[in-house]
Image (cartoon, rainbow, N blue to C red):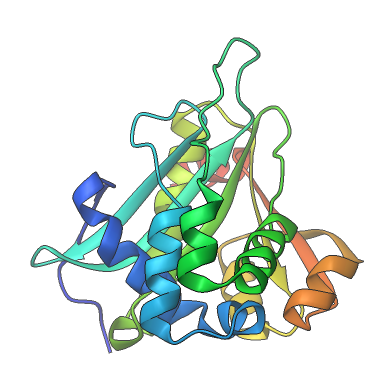
Length: 217
């Protein structure tokens, strides 16, 4: 099935609810391994904890939209410059604990921290990429990855990287087709404990590959 017409545009604050809904749908198993909450409650928790700054100087989020509906999301981040001010918004824990329970909040925040990765200088990192289930296998993920590669080159980064669990062989095959290579594979104790996925691959794509393909055309 081919992808219908859609646009890739910068994330806006009004996309927040739709993006959180998409992330819960796409990473449902991961969220459910952390908290004993229904999907709607997980979405509400994510909306309160994960607040995106559209004016950030060290990350950028894009959404794929079809008829104004969010059908995909891509989040990129890189190492902040030494002069950048902190961009994180303090989280008020008391109301979250009251609403979702202390143990759920502890596990959720600890699990999310286990997924954190600090990019090196000249590295652009795919923090997450997700496609709505009704629109998968239509080439949207491939286009978002190609968009990320283009962004990497145009922004002056040398490398585009991402993490993927060893179990996710379908995604790994797609990344290989787009010239990503496994940079390193290693056991991650925290991710194994929280997500039951012990081995993770750091895959990378070199920006010079896009330039090389252009020179051959």
